[in-house]
Amino acid sequence: MTGYGKAEVLLEEGKLTVEIRSVNGKSAEISLKTSLLPKDKELPLRKRIAERLGRGTVDVFMTWEPNAAGHTASINRELALSYYKQIGALASEIGAPDPAEEGSVYLLASLLRLPDVVDPGKRDVITEENWPLVDAGFDRALDAIEAYRITEGKALYEDVTGRVQTILALEDEVESYEAERISAARERILKAAEDLSVKLDPERLEQEMIFYLEKLDINEEKVRLRQHCRYFLDTIQTEPAPGKKLGFILQEMGREINTTGSKANHSGIQKAVVRMKDELEKIREQSMNIL
Image 1 (cartoon, helix red, strand yellow):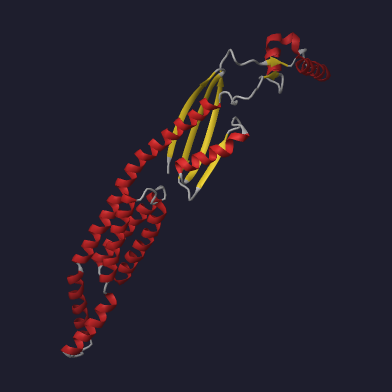
Image 2 (cartoon, rainbow, N blue to C red; image 1 turned 90 degrees about the horizontal axis):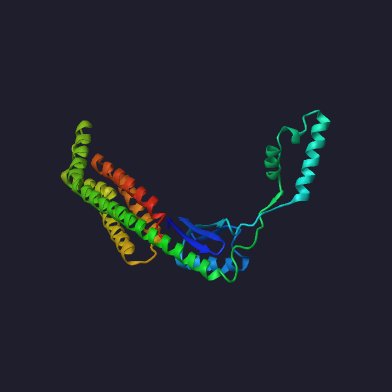
């Protein structure tokens, strides 16, 4: 959902710049951060942006640079004279030198900086006559932000799918420890019996082993995690806007990884689980920006 698009529109009296920025968001939240856009154009523009960009927090900026010839400012003479008289009176009252005697050029420059002395001659930048040009500028900015999103999306796709493949590889690593884990469990039970000087009946030992291993069995978790990983890869490859669904799949992946960790009872498996959790968290962070 992250993107940036910019377009410039050359009008008769100056240049209008349109900028659109977007970041991830649960819905389409569009903010028009400009006073240049006519009120009657706001609703149709919001609708078009939502249709083009879908989800995301979108900010729209517009800046205006008038031509020198088209920028007709005027000086409010009455207000400037009023300021001048008040400054002179204040100088006389506090015993300061007459400002006019100190330097008329500096005094004039100071007067022109006072509020409302210079009228910039503002007028509506966007009119019905030039709106088609401005409207086309918005389209170009939207095209640019969509192109940006596509580029970012390709990098995002490579990152998250690579991490899912890493989780699948770690799941294979977990499976490789299964025989060792069963053997270690048997040895622990036999050693505990030996330490307690307890003679175990072979048949009873097998029953205890079956009961013990059933509690630690992670076969269902392995199967479900692999299914969720494949579903994640299929969803991100085939659906146009998979972001929300991927979030649900990641929740299920996390549940299976956590259960595997709680049943692990093996240092190698627990290390693999920690690495899977790390990869999953990075996928979750990245997936927040998937449309």
